[in-house]
Amino acid sequence: MAEVTETQLPGVGVRYEFTTRDGARLGVLHHHGGRREIVVYDEDDPDRAASVVRLDGDDSRTLSELLGATQVTEAVRAMQQQRIEGLTLEWIDLPARSAMVGRTIGDGELRSRTGASVVAVIRGETTEPAPGPDFVFEAGDVAVAVGTPDGLELLRQALRS
Amino acid sequence: MTPVLAAASNEAALAFIEIGAVALVLALLARLAGRLGMPAIPLYLLAGLLVGEGGVATLDVSEDFIALAAQIGVLLLLFTLGLEYTGDELRHGLRSGSTAGAVDAVANFLPGLAIGLLIGWEPTAALLLGGVTWISSSGVVAKLLADLDRLGNRETPSILNVLVIEDLAMAVYLPIVAALVVGRSAADTALTVAVALAAVGAILVLALRGGDRLSALLAPASNESLLLAVFGLILLVGGLAEQLQVSSAIGAFLVGLALSGVVQERASALIEPLRDLFAATFFLFFSFQIAPATLVDVLGIAAVLGVVTAATKMVSGWVAAGGLGVAERGRIRAGTTLIARGEFSIVIASLGIGLADGDDLGAVAAAYVLLTAVLGPVAARFADRLPVHPRLRAMARR
View 1 (tube, one colour):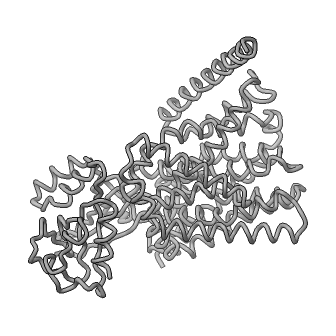
View 2 (tube, helix red, strand yellow; view 1 turned 90 degrees about the vertical axis):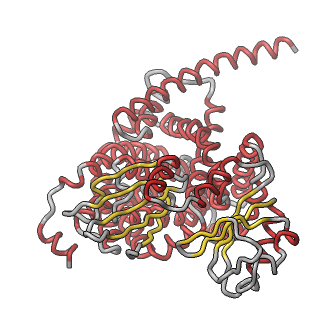
View 3 (cartoon, chains in turn red, blue; view 1 turned 120 degrees about the vertical axis):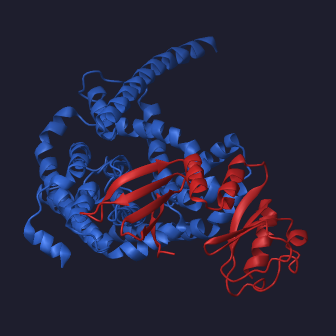
């Protein structure tokens, strides 16, 4: 895979860039609100966006569908937008020192102890949708969890200490 | 009972008619600005001049109401600004943009300060003028970048980092000048400043540390309850900050910083319409207090300031974008994008309204914002057609 550079745009979002195999410079801009922009850089002035395509959430889904990407993060975002009263969604990352590293979801009895559920785990570039009780955590995993604010706080403590 | 009610409703009727008419005029101006592709702030300022002291159609009844609404406008402006940034973005912006931020501060603060002192203003008014020329308009810059399709450009992070640093610097600058404006003895002022800065620091830490908890607390709220809770928090924290002599605007800014995640997005969507309403009132009310004749008198000074500080913003942009290895074209785009001053300059100038030179300061700031907010975006639009001296190109590519 090509090397992707990531740049923070304060107040706007995050920009990812890479050079395609035949030398074109391509960027994808993730707005905080969920909109995306695809940017192709100018050959003469590589700092300038020569053309820009704006995509809303639906467009992005269509495009990534066409490109064949996994859709878990999008599905999760949609769920988040429907907003079930009292239920919150949270991303919790696992530090290397976490007691859960190397243990399974079942070992930790996370669901029964906290009331919150881990609905997906993001590991590097891949995503594990609906991980089962035998799923083993690694350091740097990001758990996507659903629950009440209190339950999520408990889960956060369980995963981060 | 009846006569009082009758008198009140009569007055209310008059106030409604005035406010309604003004709002309709502002609506037309906002639309015109959109059509012309320019920021609306200069048009609001012009409208304020026309209906204010010595203008063509003076308003009189609703001044009290408008004054309070204008204050709320400042709080909401600063709140939505703080809302745009997450704690991580602030930390990142501070780390990667501090050199450029320092150059930006020195290059753009000093011209305002120097010219203020040169024309014989009291030091406090000159310090405020330095602030007026220092801070670029986040609103205008953000809109320019989006409108010109430059968000993806390589120089854009450097521009945004300069804005982050400027906004954070305001959290320190505003309490200091607010204390100076009160104008007590040096020891008293020093104490006030110390208390204010300690309070800012404490709220900032609280906002960054406890922000997640606050957001989690607010997350289950319905839209109605969230709107009221956020609006209440803004006014409450703003008022408490003001009690501690930290300007209320900074309190509101920090509330914005504290909110994160889903709550941040929802609050932004809910508060934005309110912000637009009250902020328009603020700009209108600011120039409402300026006699058009004074504005004409200071036009020369404002023009000199505008030219000098357009050049110094070019320096800021050049240095900031250069830090990311951007070539000369991009550096010039960054500089021209930063020229526009706006909401912040007006907020700073409004602090000095009570000073002896306050009227002149207000007039200079209004004229200056009119010039830079109109011409800055034009410069940014045509930045790629500006001629570049070969020596500059060599400098950028070295």
